[in-house]
Length: 338
Image 1 (tube, rainbow, N blue to C red):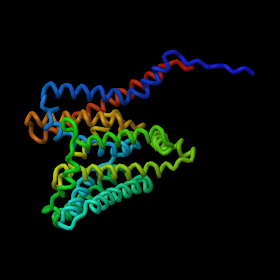
Image 2 (cartoon, rainbow, N blue to C red):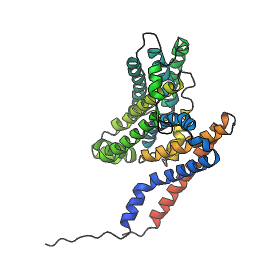
Image 3 (cartoon, rainbow, N blue to C red):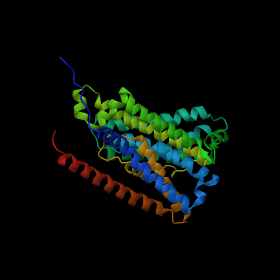
Image 4 (spheres, rainbow, N blue to C red):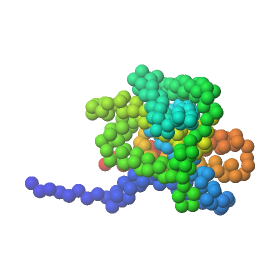
């Protein structure tokens, strides 16, 4: 018996590369164009002061959006993100801001609170079958209520310790925050886990093809519930970094991340109905949105303008994603059957 070598069509390698790189390349092209436009209109955006102000907030947005992308990848959505960021900031200052406070203890308590919220979300949604929208909104309200109680109970009179301010305020180069660097590392780590580990491949399968994954013995509920836990942990990390950058907690600390994390994920090409995750595209979406926000702030426009623009960008991104999916479906139907 002789073996035969099957030659792939000449364009197949390019097709594979486009299929793998396209979902990440397109958001980055758009993000870089936005960067160029911002630099042309507002050259100060890449000066030391501009970068030192924007990059820590960009880093926190990337971290929080990375968590939201994990949830959206399963077809869910997490509306507790803003409340988790807020309550974590309050807990951190409450535990570290006192005279006998401890940064280590504050980190443990803060991250534990976020993890608990994620566990509850995952249980309610994946094991009890409740709506992600309602469940995460409800847990978010509970966390917001706890934040209000603890804030009024003394956290409003405390500030972040100088040691933590020094950590979160550190920069390198032209004023680029180490928080942004840490967020990029998290994106790369998540990409490696999703693409090159058994856990990542099972999570992707549980997100894109839950029924087929069950037939293969994958614990679909367990993996999907775990996304809410990991997401809340990422929100908590973002919260403790954010409160360190700002210096004091407020009850509106995490409000901006309620919509912006969803906008970033959709800008990264993700469909709200779920699908394959592309952390690199999420990073690009965060860069794009951050420069829009910075440009709007530089014009001196009213504070609500950012919300209007974010809503409009979300609608346009969803339209672009939907049109792209329709075109892809038409191409598959039109392709000749082998």
